[in-house]
Length: 91
Figure 1 (cartoon, rainbow, N blue to C red):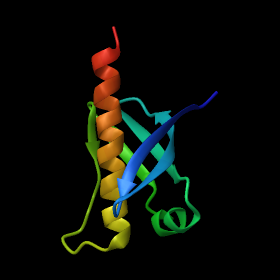
Figure 2: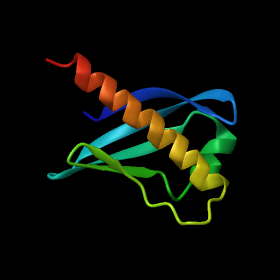
Figure 3: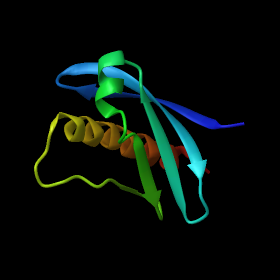
């Protein structure tokens, strides 16, 4: 059974949410993102995987940001915050 997270985030001042399907890959974790908004999901299409290595979120963003990169940054920030909050409440 897949582990799926539901996380809220803000993009351009509007609240949205996304699902993150978690795939453990040995020494790193993949988060496959599905944004719960048709237009934003289309925007993220093709660049929807966020990696965590040794507990650190890693995303590759080129120097010149476009709308897709901005969205991915906001999603990654929300995922990072969620994971930090979960690690503080875990025993």
